[in-house]
Image 1: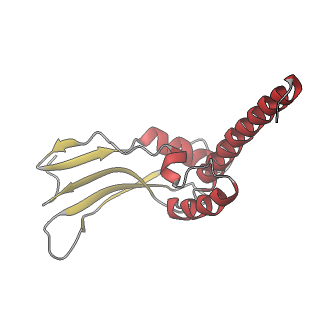
Image 2: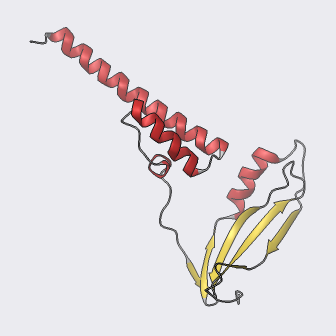
Image 3: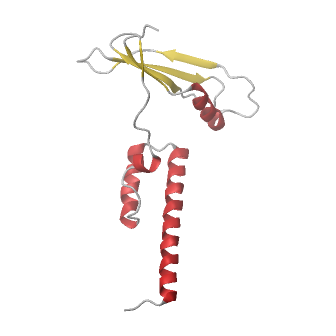
Length: 153
């Protein structure tokens, strides 16, 4: 079977449309997952179902979301410390949960140790913040310390 010029053009156009549709679908799925804050395990389950019909989709949410796998940990006071960022967390929280006309924010900060397991002395010390004026009374994490004892600094 021989393809003439029109068939080759049609095939190229079809391939281009499929690629653009795939990119749009991936972008739409990524935007949906981020805006709804669906758990990664649920998103991965959805991707596995969709992959049957769209084999070009990744099988794991981390691939599509380009989840950061390496983080910059700082050694502080005998343990490891990671700062997620106050500004980014407040910006996200403010756009989603604050009422219009809120001019002042009152922050409630909590730092308390949590044992990782019974068989280890290692502990997590999350720095949690809650905005008092928020419609949703849910804290968010700003920083995390991990070590064998309470942070020194």
